[in-house]
Image 1 (cartoon, one colour):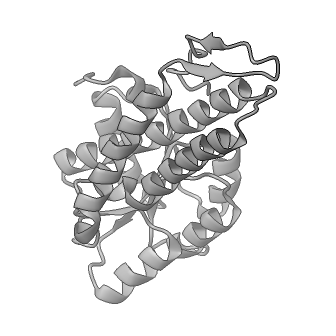
Image 2 (spheres, one colour):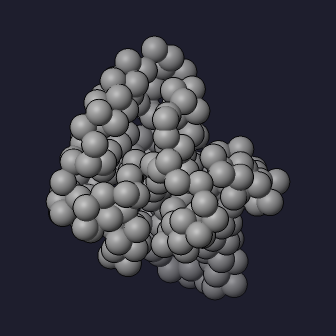
Length: 239
């Protein structure tokens, strides 16, 4: 067990696979390595309902199942979810190009090939959960900033500039976060070209957010200057 980042191990993982042997294997690997909030189903018809009730941070989804199969579930998840970044890792033994393209078009984040390599499983899950947590923290940062800016603010251009920067960070992570989280190379080599860009965007977002955490001067209509020197504690995302 390697609890190098304890907050990750309380994040929720949903396994959807109609093969009990595969489910048991993944459950054992995750439990042995400290993950405490793992839920599994073998009936694909319960997939969407379970996602709504369990609200996972990461989904491990088998492609080849009785209807609805993994492709249909993936398409439905992406169509119905309002999440900015919900990692969905496809579990498959099929490496042909057609299946790969179809899964990516449906919204797959990454691939894990069967039979599973334990080290690869753990690394990909950990990295994608880090990216997921970054998105959640960013959402909380944005909410805190919106609360802080909910006053009479004479400099409208400054306010607009800050919020445009925040929106740009969210878009950057959405475009490059998955590639950066997985090291840029999926199990089938499909994410490689985005690696450097994704990492650069995430690093850029960290730098901007660090600046935004500094005290911000507010100038109400009275022209008196007040300073906000602290922010709400948003280091832990409520679940």
